[in-house]
Length: 394
Image 1 (cartoon, rainbow, N blue to C red):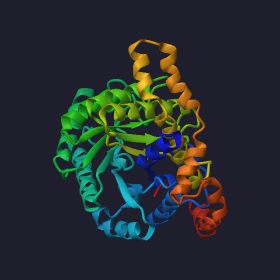
Image 2 (image 1 turned 90 degrees about the vertical axis):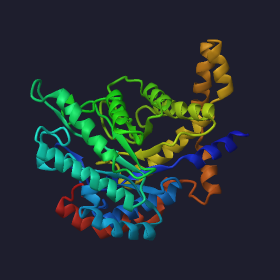
Image 3 (image 1 turned 90 degrees about the horizontal axis):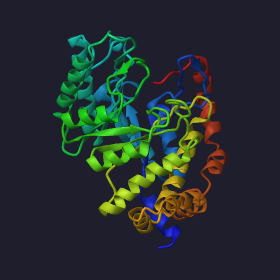
């Protein structure tokens, strides 16, 4: 096949889920910089996500946060169903919230108080039920649990509490549903985090059951860590469930994908596509964005991340795999490395544009968005409310 044909096949396989919270006004520990056109209702989040899908052709689902998007719990399912029909995109991964309530100050399922652990477990079970009602496969689990000072929490006991809770949640899964267990080295806990790295997440997923896998957030790693090696190991173990896409310069910076290190994203995509080539079929992974932009325009930043993902995914598809395997076997280091660098150096933007045009998607999503008048319209409709109320995550 030609490069254009290879890229077209690869792009047809790439679906990127958008985060509802990425369209809302958010901020840092120090404050917020409000955007007049930010979404503050579920209806607005669906509308904004639908714009990104229309302009990229790759984002048919919207991840939802239970507390922020479904405050009524399972009673809000009908509202979500109606929005799915109206905007032509579906509900994506369901994200429980076990970090915002005051009762979780010392943890959720790792809290020393059994009453708090029971409340956290009930929320997790409700999240599974919401996902089932919406025909959603993935329940995405991130925990802020940890401690700030040595000796203040029983680390081994908390490990057991986590394992017990995840196992009990796993029991509620319907066939085909999955738990995605995320990890993070630090923040908000700065001494120890209960699920601090991929090994801890993998152990807990294994103990929970066969429908639990690890979620890799590309921002949740120590400086210089080889993320593609982690991806390769989890693929080999059959426990890689998906990704949260972002980029970072220092820590979990929530930057647009590829803005700092596009070659790292390419290397991750290469490992996935190499695995698919060797196995004869792609792994069943969820590709999700996890970014909350305070300075960039929220919709435009999402378009930028998705388009960058498409371009880097296309580059990874162009690696000469048979040649790479041969060079690896003969330890021809320069030739093997050039299989990657040559593909990475290929300008895939015209190929992505051709793919988009052939599928009725605007060839230039940035220009199409700016000329659509959508931002001006939502700024008029939402501006006064957003700038006066200081609207938050919800």
